[in-house]
Length: 396
Image (cartoon, rainbow, N blue to C red; front, side, top):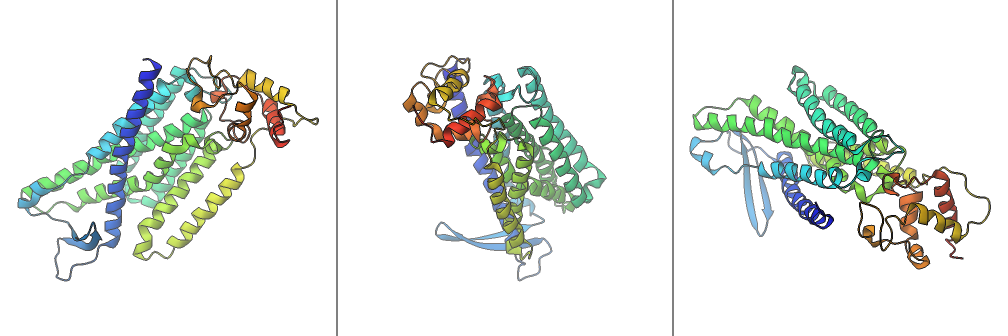
């Protein structure tokens, strides 16, 4: 597939993925909000789980949650499933376009593990499929009643998966596959648990029977799981823009910390209106954790020895020419790029001077560049560039 066609495929699939993802996540947030704001009806009704009054779009909405639906209303039901299915399909398609067809530098980092592109793809696909299978077996077992313990076990498994992938794949790809695994778990929850449970409920209603509460209980349990995974998965979707997270030595710990922060924010949003006294403290802890992460990741990554003598532009330019201009040039020689990535070029002094902030972020404060360290920039070279920038990035 030609690079131009691949780029357009990337654009449209990514755009579509965002559109359907917004629809899916929006419904998850909305229904969790409704559950938190339901109040009992004045008249006794054993089939009512509560109601809520809302105002929006210049009108009032009365919404009631019921455990039983009269058979004549079954045809009026609005189902929420296609948002999830299309988000999953478009996400897997995007993963294939960017990481599996986009070049080995996105998947493989020789400084992390000596893998081929096919080996890295097998590890990525295996993690997604295997992670879902283990999760599904666990939550279908009788132990699913011990939710606290099961959640703890799942988090420990996530720790192991994050640590393992960041020691096998390039940091950016490792993050993306952890997020893809969680996303597929969410889609599978809808496909294999939530929708089947709800179909059983509808069939019982159609027959004039009261549905088994266990069907709705299982669907609700998985819906809550999905709701708490949304913010971590959203972070992964945008993580490639933040090399201070994925291109760090402790990237797996940073990823898990951000997941916990996302979960804490979701807990606050889900419980604060219910009067949970711990909710504000959980949110405050999340804010403090974000500040702490920012301070920790502000420490430069490069560990080479800083030159004692003044670093000249000629010394820095030698590093740029050997390690960077293969991609960042008006005429890239790298097999992945036919145009300089993000328009950044290092062909002249002026172009280099205009990119100092990006150079510091991508090659000094983190190891995000060169991509997959394809040109094998050394720690000593990163230290040299760091010293040159600290001296004011002189051009003489």
